[in-house]
Length: 197
Length: 140
Image (cartoon, chains in turn orange, green):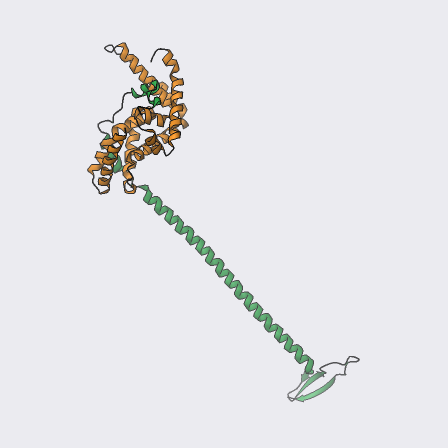
């Protein structure tokens, strides 16, 4: 993971230098480079792919607008993910304000039960159902646990990189990941006991 | 991460198995068009607004301070002129007292084209009985 990070840092620094020099192609290159990981991260945070993609686009726009003020310290990725996390936080606050309507939307089909595929086997159905349940359990975690758990367990980031992105200590990150995992375990216990795992 | 027991947790194993979402084909174009449509960075206008507000505040505070200074100077000038007037009146009063003590008092009581009729009072009246007033005729 560290090797991936250092390679990314060098390439990102180069892209940002090109952007500051007015190279328009670097815009597209930068977006192309990080879009999939960011969309995946925000999809897991918001629990909805479309919303995740929208927030990822907004995060890139804010990053690109901040290029003139950006100082190269080899921390573009934490900076981008901090913007994205803040957007997800705002989204989360908005959703909590309208929780009643959000719940109504979920009941109206935002969280569909997978259809039975006649060509797929029972294993595939079981896997899809497990993924749906696990994804829903993650989306239901409070954001202060959801963010570090997603970055650590899904995106494979180190504790240090997460702490850098969230502007907190490594100890806090470890504690939140641990507590997030405990909450997930409690939430998923009925499913494990029912034989989904 | 591989040495970390937390990383091997079955719950996290299930999280890692979640399918990875990828950006849609039009994602980058969408970002670039959003960037084009986005208003110019609001930092500039916010900064200008803050500067303008600061200037207005400074102007108001400056004008207030100037006005207070002006009023204070005006009051000082008034106090100075009152003191001067007071000193002048006091010196005039003392001069009058001095002259009253040394010179007889003459009161014009009438007259014609050739003479003034004055009532002349002594400079210092005797303590026992006042000196009788006498009519003097002074040629004008």
